[in-house]
Image 1 (cartoon, rainbow, N blue to C red):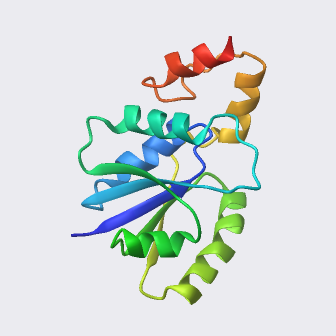
Image 2 (tube, rainbow, N blue to C red):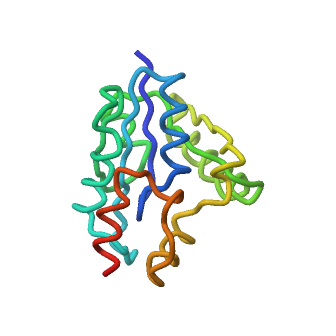
Image 3 (cartoon, helix red, strand yellow):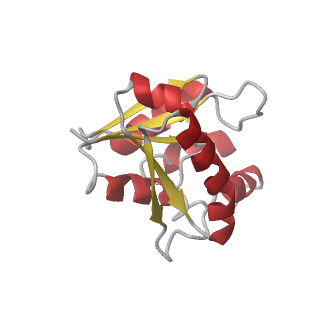
Length: 158
């Protein structure tokens, strides 16, 4: 069974994330969407809320699980018996950011491969950073977030 971990902060999860994850199910038998907990980072949504949003997005996908973890992604991947880390690339800047992480991961865990999928043109401009700004200023979030979480996020906006 081919298992992958798709790590991120998912603050919040976007249409771009869900696109990559769902396309990943064409390659992997199981994907764990994993929230990496960073105590130094300030989040818009609590860990509990982010987990609930992930669960809502993938309730109809038995091959997709959700979890949170502390520590190194490669250690979490090993705990999950996952031989792969799945990542999305929106732009050349993403590749520049992802490449050194992949090289360090490969140094620490030569048995774990990182697989990158390119975002579609429809979702390539969507980032959690931009979406957080839209939410902060009560802008239109339709099309940026998975429809399953839009009502929850709208409730948090007002």
